[in-house]
Length: 189
Image (cartoon, rainbow, N blue to C red; front, side, top):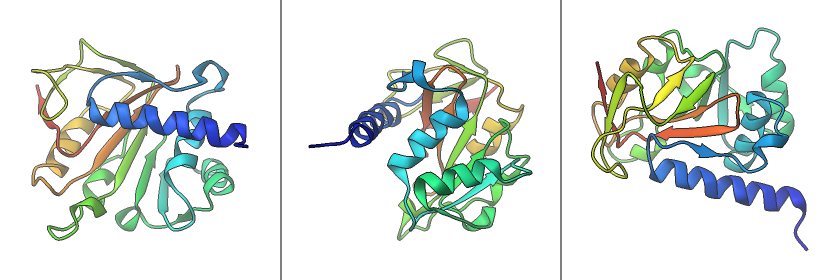
């Protein structure tokens, strides 16, 4: 018999796969109404993506409270931003740190980091940047409210040498998820 946690993790993983395969689209997390905020959603997502062999770095976490929650849920170890597998930017900005993230190598492009931004609100239109590429029919202009100005430009620069680059997840206050994988071209206006 499967526990409720395993069933919830499986449902979350399926939503993440859907969001990653449809860049710029907004997906609702399972049990989004039960989440108490972005941190709760973040923990649920990380619980199904990382374990004790995966490293992370949490930015803007002065008391390390968020990292402690992540550690309790995943046993992931905290490392420097430039060597982390997962980077969590809890205030919608990397303050330029995303440019120091691991982008993988030509031999192992999948070893690039995954960045997670906690933002205010996500929407599928009226955004500032154009997204093109695999999984997108034409062009999307997703709204990412609470993401610092210039952050998508930094992500675009980090992904300029495909297949090298970063995969990005965005989580909002309402249990919504959006992904922009490194294969997506970002046109910043």
